[in-house]
Structure formats: structure tokens, C-alpha cells
Amino acid sequence: MGVTPFARGDVLDDLRQQMAEKRKVIDGIEQKINEFKTSIAKQQSQALTLSGQIKIIDNGVTSLTLEIDKTNAQISELQTESEALKEEIETVDRQIENQKVILKEYLRTLQALDTMGSVQSFFKYATLSDAIREIRSVYRAEQNSQITLDRIRELQETLKAREVTFNDFKRELDGLQARQISQKNILGQQQEAKTRLLELTRAQEYEYGKLLNQTVAEQKKQDAEISRLDTAIRQELERQGYRKLSGVGKLDWPIDPIFGISCGFHCSGYPYASLIGAHTGTDMPIDMGTPIRATADGYVGKIHLSSGTGYSYILLIHGDNISTVYGHVINASVNEGTYVTRGQIIGHTGGAPGSRGSGLSTGPHLHFEVRKNGIPVDAQNYLPSLGG
Image (cartoon, rainbow, N blue to C red; front, side, top):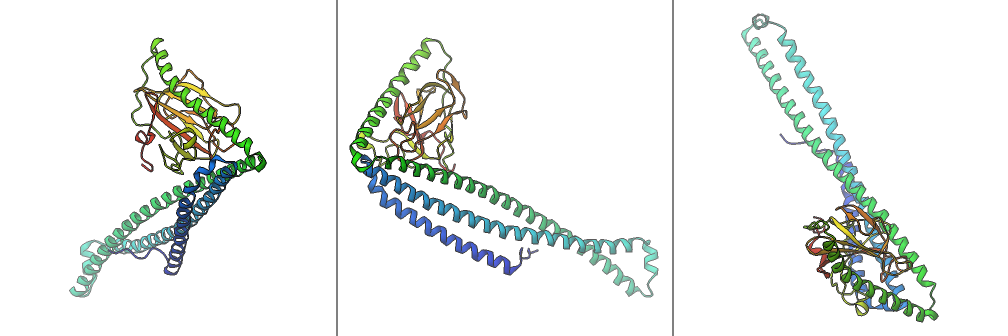
């Protein structure tokens, strides 16, 4: 038996038209985002000058503003879809109540006929044809009762499915609204970073160059230190007879990568490649202060927190000669020389240019590295696929 339309035609048609229009808005924003990403990819080398760094931050602000517009449009689209689905749910609920009323009437008829004995019921009619008509009436009432009961069950299943979809929409909407808050936080942090850089006027380009050179030297030093410590700590743990470190298997994401990856292992267009070499980690844009979680059980080998804007990081030592590095952190929630478990919070993200612990950075993010025998390797070979 077919299912009748779920909502008033005029209301549902209007909501569907609204959804189509909002989808066009989202498509238009996505096109602008893709065009803008293409245009700024060629400008990454500008990070080597003060004005270039400011330009990159401006580009990041423009790109992020477009992303916020897209999120706003997605929220609006989902709210309209939810409204349409709610209309369908209310209509199906009304249909169920109507069918229950019909079923009660059929059952009342059957109950009235059943109160007499079969022989008594037969002799109340003047003719045989009247009795046969009554029997057929009872049969039809029984059939209609079964049809109505089946219809109620069908509508209840439809209602259940629609409610599941509605709850899925609500969870997706909650996720988009959380994403929107995070995007706005990153935007504010980028704007603050630009303000800090603008305090260095063009006449102070030399000061910026000197500051950049100091940051580069510090980051190179810390990179070499991480490689040295990886080997030294393992040897010391073995000498002291510490328990065997657990193998990592598949790593967890250190943060929820809601904005994907901005620069992967050895990514092209890395703005500091000419200064410190190829990009050795996986960068995940995220607002400052986001909790970082250990990607596997491990030993806290090193915590380096810069007193200024130098590169800060946390180094975890794992089994299988694997170590993980969490860079551009603003603090640590664990202590050196302790063991941590998978999923444990070990610190919080930073990365806004000029902020504490940022080192070389163009925006708030987590720089995550996986090292095998002290040598950086592609972290994405150890992490779950995005969206997986």
C-alpha cells in the first residue's frame, strides 16, 4: 500500500525551493574558496619579509572569512532541511492518529456484532439474504481492521525512520555550529597576529629579518635536538630497565581535524622551505587552546616551552622506534619522564604568528610529526583517513 505525501504540498514545496537556493549559495562560496586558494598558492614565499608575512595573514583572514560564510550557509541549509523534515514528522504523526480513530470504529462494530450468539444473530434477520449481507459486512469490517492496522504499522515505521534522520540532522547541525565557533576564534587570533606584526613598521624590516633569522636558528636547533633525544632517551630507558614501550599500531588523531590538513609532509608551497628545508610534519588548522591528545601510549621524552615566540613542542617516545612530536604548543599538561596513555590530554595548541611558542608559523595550527628511528616520515601513513 503506497504512503501518502508527508507534508502539505505548498509548505514542503516552499521549503524545497529554499533548500535549492541555499545549495546554490554554498556552491558559489566553494567556487570562490577554490579560486582564492589557487591565487594565494604562488605567494607563500613572501613569508620571508615582514610585508609578505602580513600579506599571508591577510590571505588567511580572507580565506577563513569565506569558510565562515560557507559554514553559515551550510547551517542555514540544514536548518531548512530540518524544518521540512519536522513538517513531515508532524504530518505522519497526524495520519497515525487518524488511522487509530478509524481502527477504533471498526473494532467497535465487530464488538457489537460479537455480543450475540451466532444462532441468535442469524435468526434476527427476516431473510437469508439479509443474514448473508450481515456476514459479508462483518468480513469487510475484519478486513478493513487488518488493512488499517497494517497502515498504522507502516506509518509508525516511516515515523521512526524520519525521527532517526531528524536526529542525524541535529547532530550535524551541532557539529557545524561548533565548527563556526572555532572558525571565528581562529579569525580573531589571526587578526591579533596581524596587529602584532604591524607594530613593526616598514622602517623595522631589518628587525623582522633579524627576528626571523633567530626563529629559524631556534627551530633548526630544536629539530636537531629532537633527533638526538629520540636515540638518547631510548638508550637510557633500556639501560634503566624500564618496561618495553608499547607498539603504536594505528595512531589516533591528536586533535579532531575539523578543518582538514593545511600542509602535509613535504607539501609544495611551504613558505619556510628555503629557510629550514622541506616540511616534516602534518599541519592541522585549529584555534589556539584546543586540547592535544596523545596519539598512542608513550613516554614523555621532552617538553620544550619557549619563554617567548620560539618553537615549543612535546616529544613522545613509543615502541617500534616510533616517536611523535606536537609542535607550536602553548603549554603542556604532562611532565617529562612520565608515561601517558592513548587519548590523554598532553597540552594545548598555539601557532598564531608572534604568540608564545609559535616559532615559524602563518596561523593557529598543530604541527604533528611522526618519526621512525629519529627521522621524520609521513604521519598520514599512521593516521586514520580523513573522515574515516
